[in-house]
Image (cartoon, rainbow, N blue to C red):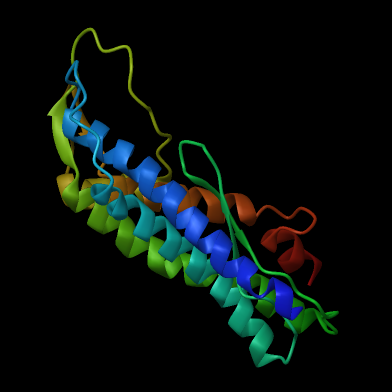
Length: 205
């Protein structure tokens, strides 16, 4: 990387840290609200629950690719994080691979190491987030709130921790749990066998 651009990964990381901390603060405020009409006052520091978790998942994913490249002597950049003013505070991260990958075995390993590394971090985060979550009755007239899809892994983890939920109850997901849910979703989407996604590299290999 040119010397005048070595600052870019760090600058993007700090920007993404800021955006995910800010968004995480709102996630924590809504978590505390628990269907109340008024949301508790916003606070930035509790946003670390969400921010640190999602950065750990995305960062570990990309470092999996990075160290696989290092193992094979392939020139690659450190992760570039992408901040975004969205519900997630980020649209992910990526590394730049500056050399051609010469064999399909190398391509497979580089493509697979990222999802494996990210998954290893995301699963404990999901269980930890679910432990910090709580079960609460659903208000009869509830028309708001964010309804997340529930992959099989999420359902299994929730059942192991909370068992079968009583009728008319739901899990209010802690920000750490939401970060893990988003990290697992990003990992799953990345495994689609399309183009430059990890799944595309793996299927081509």
